[in-house]
Image 1 (tube, helix red, strand yellow):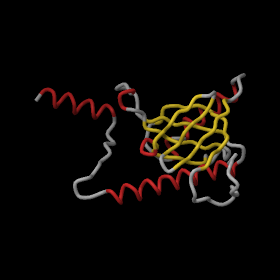
Image 2 (cartoon, helix red, strand yellow):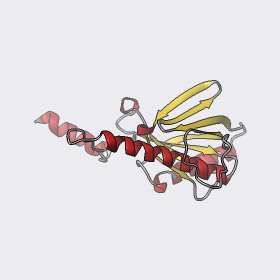
Image 3 (spheres, helix red, strand yellow):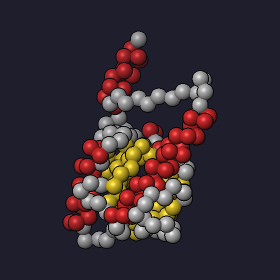
Image 4 (cartoon, one colour):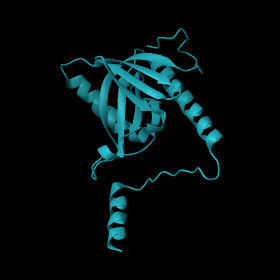
Length: 176
């Protein structure tokens, strides 16, 4: 549930906002963004939650212009906005919000994808929608900041090749 005084029926443009959720967990995602890359992981997490005898972990998510902070069991995990690639209210489970986070490449083995889908059970479908709007506002703010500081010398690119393609290119480069 949103802890701010704003109505969750309309998008609130001001950040930060906090949400009380229950953590469903995380699974590997095969892609950087899109509902097609959250569908299987969310389905697996929901099935696991239904079959589990333990209760879901209560968590607070704080969304700011700089990213998301997860607080649970007196622990805090910060995910900077530039490591979050996607967030969405699930179409099947409308109380579920999921996001794809890009893992630190040093934590990823060759056979793994660097993307993790995290899912959260919100108190209502309106709260899941509001969480989605908040993350969208953070993305918009980040985009404006990147564009404001961007000049001809500052460019970036995203390599969307599969780990196998990258590994094959590394082998070719090392043989040359």
